[in-house]
Image (cartoon, rainbow, N blue to C red; front, side):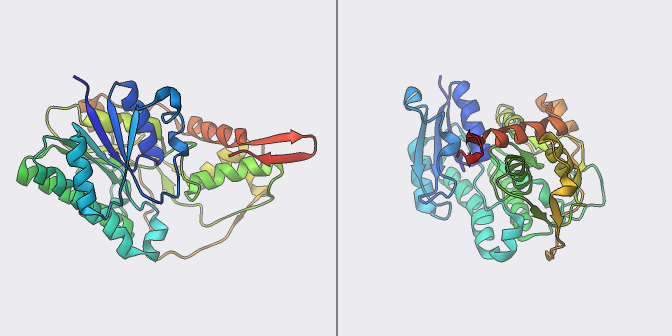
Length: 334
């Protein structure tokens, strides 16, 4: 029997890759879209093409609208619900902590409450974050590592994480937390560090800009490839019992390494084009690296795209968006 899936945040990087994966697996896919989504539907262009009519159905709602969310869930009756919607910019969360808590924290409560109150046997995935670990003293981190959130975004994710555990244990709901480490792709939003770097490398190579300004490059992250991470999400909901899993590569690279690799892929020396300007943020997570033993043993999942390959994929995609129309003139394709 054909399964039905509902994805909040379907227009984002993860949501669009997940939608594609589920369509390939024969699911009826539904997505929740904000009425005024700044990202638009570009990430879903292939799935919304007339040749693939009805492969994905969209429903408009704000994650803060409890009654509308309930209405959508009751109408769709999903076998699986992937809750990916969030205000996911850690820096912005300091500027709007209340909004971040409302969307990330209480938005998750509304999703869980709707499924519980309707009484559906829906399996729920929640996109948790490595940012929850924050100021770490243990490396690599696993599912038992204590949380120490350093931003309002991370604190809201910790709240949402424990609500998922609480609903699972108190009501017997099938709810999984995927503790996702940084995962990137050509669909990553332009406000995120990795995409800022790869776009700038492509534009500088094409002569569309001269310099890139960045803040401190010393922090290190565990960077993976987003299409592989959505497979891990799906695998969690195929298990007989729910649980929480770290999803990562197990490798850590500094922000400086990412910049160096991206500019090298574009045939440039980053030191000739990048200005490092110290910026103050109240607090931030420093060095994050995930231990994926549990995901490997129980889900059979392992990241296969390595750091250099990830950087190459992103730079090549951004270079393809910049194309010469005629000699001496360069324009940017969207």
